[in-house]
Each structure stands twice: as C-alpha cells, then as structure tokens.
Amino acid sequence: MRITSEQPADNGVLPVLDTLVDLGPHGPNDNGPRPRLAVTITAAPAMDRTERQHLLREALVHMAHAFGYVDAETDVL
Image (cartoon, rainbow, N blue to C red; front, side):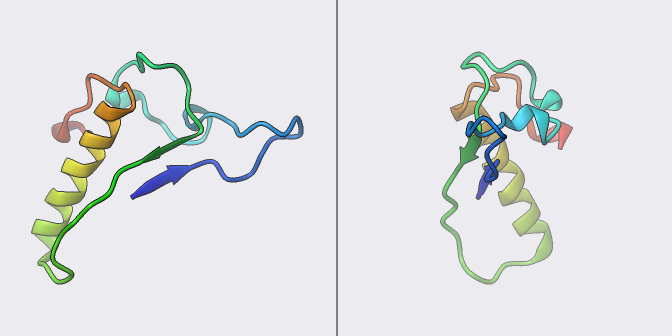
C-alpha cells in the first residue's frame, strides 16, 4: 500500500501528504512532513471482506507508526 503525492508543485517539490490527506486522526508526526508513505502487505490473494478490511487497517497503522505518527490506532479508522 502506498500513499504518495505524485505531482510536484510549481517549485518542483512534492507537496506533503498533510496538505492532500487528513492524517490528523493519527496524531502528530514526530519525523516531520513527508510526501509519501508505504507499507508492504503479504497475504493470501483471496480473503473475505472483513479479513481484508482488518488487514488493511492494521497495515495502515503499521505504516503510520513507521513514518512517525505515534498515536495511530485502528479504532480511529
């Protein structure tokens, strides 16, 4: 899973994600602004909807923690 700002601003710099996606529910970022976040998910290709949603929420929280959003929790998603 990857969240990125792909289109550079007029100055050639990628905008930070906070200007494109509301990351506020994950708390403050202790690593500063970032133009991208990413996480790899390894799972069976076929799973039911509930299992898939749970896995994606866990992956999003793991990704948020890895990139400095220390307050990220699955219950706010």
